[in-house]
Length: 447
Image (cartoon, rainbow, N blue to C red; front, side, top):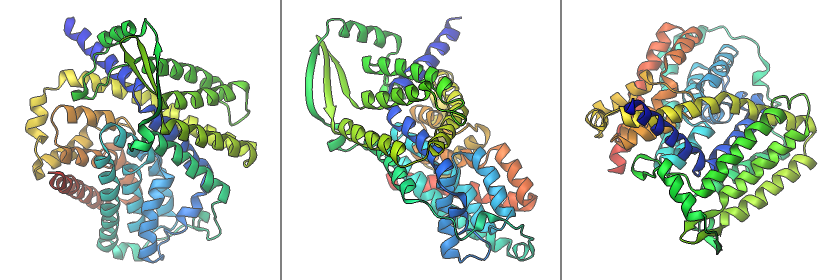
């Protein structure tokens, strides 16, 4: 019974620390960016460069970029992949689109950088693009005869007239700026410009109580829950309630609850930007550069949303954002909880012996983890953090992160239904080889 209670406590401790930590400054903006990518960017503006007869120097970079801006996870990119392939995209560009999209989606990359490290996030982007293009070129070459005889459906997805409006580009850049200002670890953003102390006799007692419930343990990725974090968790609960009433039907109408949810989100981002530390007689409150940056950028976003877009444009954006939240957040909460449980169940010696060193075998095992232990978008990040805390080398860890969305059973089955058994087999083999090599090369570079 005590063992079961320890597992439950570890799971809830992991979840509480996760929700209270600085990931808010990456998750909330990332969801809004994902919604904007889906609702505001015309799909044809990207896919028009993926046609079967488009020059390689255009189609392959475009497919890599398109995978980034049009997809959020493997479940999202699969129908897009099927559509563009059947309606005129070359096999190579379509495969690059399929590989790169889930590997570099904005949500996962942001969370990877914040929780695991910028080195893994950058390597995930760079190596997935390089090897995604390489895999696409190899698939195009191997099956070049099949491609010559393939029948193409007529589609407007490859229209040459699709353009991205200037106000959409500016709005998207501002959303990215919110994300960058909140997460970029540079002194001008993270160091307090002003700092003052507030005498609060109860603060140290409350912090001691929080530490007893969720003991901080940075070695395994548990940062603990601060007083600021406790307040942010409370705001998240209020956001969830307001969003359920204000965003669940925002595609039909805008209500007071819609503005309440957006106001609470704005408040949460601003409060998360403070640097609040418990001291002996109260709290030390720092006002870092990112606080002022967030206030300026978010204010500009509010102004643009009201002045430069039609109401239905904003409704569409908020609806797509809310759709991603409903799809991902429940799975993410469960995944973080299970990651906390896994820290107690999985012996560190197992992970260390299997993938504790940067060898080709260890990286191949990391790829197998991605196949066997598939998790939905974002959930793979706390799971990867757990592997890291248990002794996995960062090379095999990258191999796992690259393979996880690509080689799941469901992804393989859907790919098979689109391009056939033979092409799917070759694709799976190539992804396995290049994911293993990616992890191995990265592991050599950081040694």
